[in-house]
Length: 197
Image (tube, rainbow, N blue to C red; front, side, top):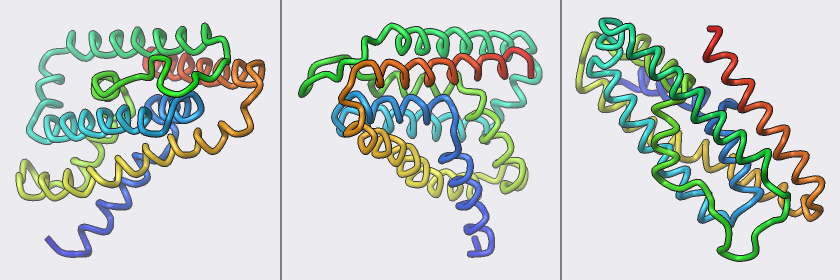
């Protein structure tokens, strides 16, 4: 594969991974609330979950969804329920930062599952594969997935680090509660996109 194809694939992967979406908002929240290492566990799960979804879509999962109209509706409602659950957890948060290793950060499996319920991940997979992979060319799909893996991880990780940077300014529980509620509202708003798109 030529450099003229690798560069646009990489640019697409970067734009799709770093732009705001539900997973990015949870990464930001992890950075403000938990040690960076705990946030990066979520990032790793989200990255590997996305790559699994990306490869599955490239191997034909998207066409299976087209043949089974009820399945895409079930995925949509599952995504809405999961995002509303995460929004509810953010709203209920008391704004007190956990000390050390206490507190329950979203983990590896939460990150992986979230990508499969994330409309942005499905759209990015379908659009990227449609634009850069000829037919069902396994070689192109493998290269694209190999490029996406570090780009996605670094992009999501940057949101965790941004949250960690903001943490130094969030030593007041009332301020963090407000930020959590804004993030919760944004997550809930992304549900409207799922339901009405």
